Image (tube, one colour):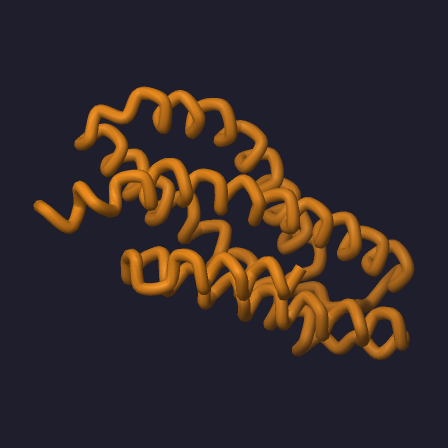
Length: 157
């Protein structure tokens, strides 16, 4: 998962400051996810580690919805990219479903800490990891279609 994150940043790094910052935050999210998984597997999950992961998780998914996606849609509208807008409408419902799963994980574990059934938390963490991986792929597709396709046009504006 971290390798695909690095590849995405290399592909789009420097294209737009907002996307750059968001991809850097994605990398931090993956690093904290990995650390939390390793701790959970060793049955050493700490409240601090779990809270740190949940904080960046919420920041990341919020930035996607309230900053990055809006910017990408505005750009596609500006360039009258109907195909890009159609793709966004197709992918957004799945991204929203994954966002809800992330928010539910945060609501359950973000402030409560690892107390309770650690195996259940670890299982949900692994499930969330799979969903985040899917989300990253969908987001990369949106960035490719809704931003990179307009890069030449943006440089002339």
